Image 1 (cartoon, one colour):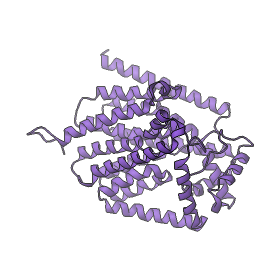
Image 2 (cartoon, one colour):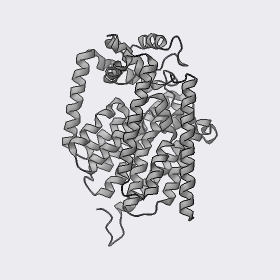
Image 3 (cartoon, helix red, strand yellow):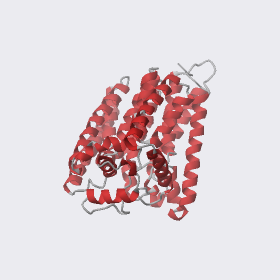
Image 4 (cartoon, helix red, strand yellow):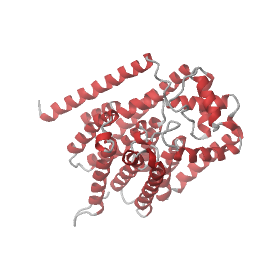
Length: 410
C-alpha cells in the first residue's frame, strides 16, 4: 500500500472514530438530562412569550427570567438567565415550537438540524465535484468529526443554518444568479452579526439586483413582525443588542470562551478590563469591515479564482473579528476552509500540507476546551484562524502579482 493510501485510511479511521465518540457523547447528554443547558432554551423562552401574546415585552429580562425558570421547573443557568437577544422575528418562528413541551420542541429542532446537516453534506459533495474521491470523503467525514458541529447539534444553535446559507450564497455568486444571492442572505439575518459581512460583500461588489431581493424580503419580514409585535419591538431589540454587546460574563455571554479577537483580548486582559476589551473588539470588527470593503469595492469581477480567494479571506476575517463567536460558531470556518481548498484543486496546486493542516484542526478545536489557552494565552482555534488567514493572503498576493508572461486570473 502506498504512503498516500495509508495516510488516507488512517485519517478516515480517526475521523470515523471521532464521529462515533461524538454520537456516544450525545447519547450521554440525553441520558444525563443536560440538553436544557442549550441555546434552544433561549429560543424556546422567546417563543413562549410570543405564544402567550406578550410579545410586546419580549426583551424584558425579568419576564424572560420568570418564563425560563418556569420552563426549566425551577432550574436556571449559572447567571440566572440565558437571554433571548435574537431578532423578534426569530421569536415568532419559535412560538410555533413553544406550543409543545420543551423536550418535544427540542426533538423537533434536533431533527430539523439533522435535515440541515444532510443538505450541508450534499452541498459540500457537489462543491467538491472536481476533487479526487478520497479527498471528498475526508471532507465529509472531517466536517462530521468537527467539534463545533457537535456543539451546534447539542445546543440547537443556528450556526449550521448560517453555514449552509453561506455556501449556497457563494455558489449563487459564482454562477451569477442574482436573485438567489439576495434570497440566501435572508435566513442569515436570524443571526444579524453574521449577516453584516456577507451583506457588505454584496453591496461592495455592486450586486444591485441581489440587494433589491434582500431588501424586499427583509421588508416583508419587518412588516409582518411589526404587525404581530408592534413597532416598539424594534427599539427594544436595538436596546437589547446594545446591552448584550456590553455584557461580560453574564446572561450567557462569556467572551473568554469565544473563538475571536475579542475572546483573545479577554484572556489577555481579564474581565476587569471589560470596557477596554469591548472597545477594542468593536474597533477590530470595524477594521475587518474596512478590509472587506477594500477587497470588494474596487475589484469587481476580476476573475473566478480571485473571487474564490477574496471570499475565503473575507469569511475568515468575518469569524476572527466578529463580536460574538461561541464554540458552535466555529462551524462557520468550514466555508472559507473549503473554498480555499477548492481553489488549490482548480489551480492544481500542491495541497497536501494544507490538507494535513485542516485535519490537525479537528483535534485542535477539541483540545481548546481543556484549558490549554490558560497556558498559551490564546485559544487554539484563533491560532488556526490566523494561520489559515495568512495562507489565504499569501496565495491571493501571488494571484494579484503574477510572474511576467503568466496569466493567473480566469
